[in-house]
Image (cartoon, protein in one colour):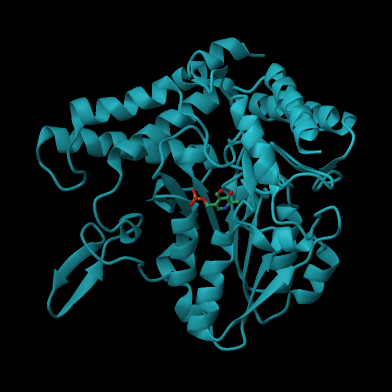
Length: 406
Ligand SMILES: Cc1ncc(COP(=O)(O)O)c(C=O)c1O
């Protein structure tokens, strides 16, 4: 398969210590670490190539443009989009979702409906609430059961001709639950003419993505959660859908002609890329895709699922651990609390002293926390470079927290 130590050696940061202990980085759902190859590409851009793109006749500008457009093609292939111009560079999932909700404003009217799920990140809730405020549309929510699984029979009842948007994540960041988006998309296509938006922030780093097979209208994800620099992201939109919708930001790059009498817009993808893009970051995102593809998405998924299974088994061997979404189909995340003792942040602080980086709190998913009547969870999330030994360190740390907090 692959040599995990060789992969770890590609990440300088993984060799550092935290609080005198080797770093055990288990906060990958928040952001992944970046391999040296990606940092090198990013650094080379600024040391050797830096120029603004698309506007220059000079050599550096042309080279920078070529590199960035090459990266767009890598992303196109990575998600199997039909055209490279369906790939829009953004600064992350949040920007992608805000962009979509903004450009759909004219398509919605009072009493239309937008369906999201209980498992959404705030960035797939608030933009739709803002759209409802602008248009008078109503937000409907697919509920979950006690295992965190979406109740699709209720989704069936929510879907109607009034439904104009269905926006759900493929994988929940708080619980790691893999949602049945294939079924959600089929049902939506069959029973409404709604736009389908998939938040792929937690799936793109772990799964093979095929937007044509998926048949969604939009798919958004963040580069920084998949080994690329922060401030990078992608919005995929179907050609015909993007052609039909208005621009988001106005400014340079997105115009064909501009005068005081009016402006005509550039074609795709530039219509949605106003202003100077994150050229170095976007090029480095292409390099992160090279990194992923060299290992192979199936190998990544296989390894991360094995880590999850091991972590869950080891944690459940301890007395008094509650895992949220324990019985659901999950990937890459274990979200838990110590029953009756301690709050998540106390556990997180004890783990930090041992060099273990986990996230604690509501993970930008307050409705999920309300559902389970908790303030937060301890979340360990995995990437390709994590090892079974690191999970042993996590479990020993949790045992220590139990002793200290009881
Ligand atoms: C499922 C999901 N959606 C959206 C986001 C927002 O991503 P970003 O902060 O990179 O814009 C996150 C980030 O954690 C996420 O996990």
